[in-house]
Each structure stands twice: as structure tokens, then as C-alpha cells.
Length: 145
Image 1: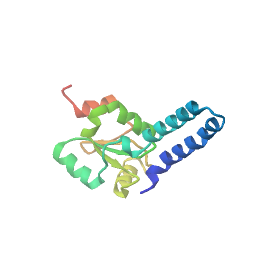
Image 2: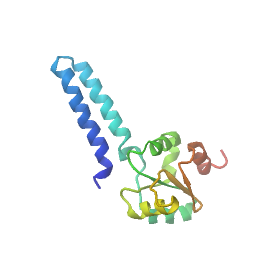
Image 3: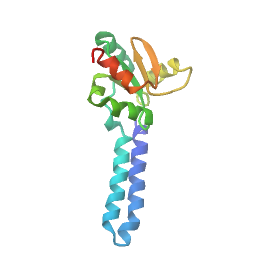
């Protein structure tokens, strides 16, 4: 459960350590800027950036009902972050499964990728796509747009 928060916590701690130098020499403006940059990096690498994750079984059930794609992801993945940011508000319409929190989700990703946990893996109509272009995923959400 704590694994997704390891990188953000480390980034905040590194920022605090890096800011001690400017604060000690009497330059609080630089110290605050350093802390702000590290907090921003921590936020971008935290689970907070993503829509709420659900279990793989719940995502499959919902996807069957509404036809929306499933995104298997993990915190700290730059490709997952790129997909999330490029989808914008449309990302909330997808079903997101954090493979670090859901062992069934991790197993589904390994089954789709020959044993590797390569994310993001997007499942559309039962077919997995590994690290698809965000524009393509957006087209799957809004086919008429």
C-alpha cells in the first residue's frame, strides 16, 4: 500500500535537504523555490494525479457495461503520466487500475505483455494495447469527435 508513495516521499525529503543550504546562508527565496520544485515533482509522481483506481474485476465489469477502455498503470511511470496529462479531463471517463495495488491487475498486464508489467496497458473491447498514443486513446473515448 505504501509503495506508490515511496517516490513522492523521497522527492519531498530530497527537496527539504536541498533547501537547507540556501536557508542556512540566508537566501530563503531560493530555498522556497527548491522546495516548491520538489513538491511539484512529488505531486506529479503521486497517485493523486490519476483518477481513483478500482480493482481489475470491477474495471472489467464496468467496461463490459459501458464500453469504456481500462487503463492499467502504476505511480512513477512517466508514460502513464504522459497519457494521463494528455487525456485531460477525459481521463476520468476511463477505468484506471493501479497494478501496484491490485494483484489481479498486475496479473492481467503480465498476461497481455508476455510476463512483463509494461504500463500503461489500455484494454479496449477486450484487446490490450501497450503504451498507446494518447490521441488514439482519446479517439476511443470520443469516437465521433
